Amino acid sequence: MRQDEFGNACPETLGEYRDAMLALVGNDQNPAVQFLDQKIAAEGRAATVLAPDSQMRGLLFRLAFDLDE
Picture 1 (cartoon, one colour):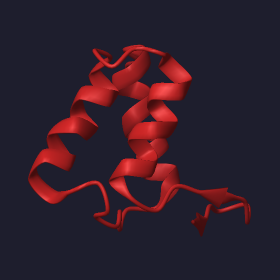
Picture 2 (cartoon, rainbow, N blue to C red):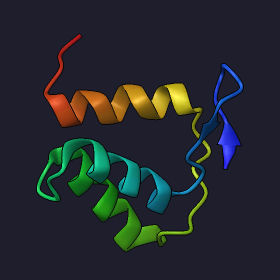
Picture 3 (cartoon, rainbow, N blue to C red):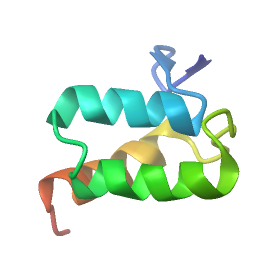
């Protein structure tokens, strides 16, 4: 795993992000999990995420919880 902006361990791959989001929302039909499933279908579970964790959290939490800015 890589580190976030605070030095904490955070997901590094699409699969790790999917597993974390599924554990958080508990529903594989959640838009954030579905988004990650589509990415995994195209790139694979082991694909490394290049975006910073803060950006991934922002994107996935907006999808998961229908948050608007």
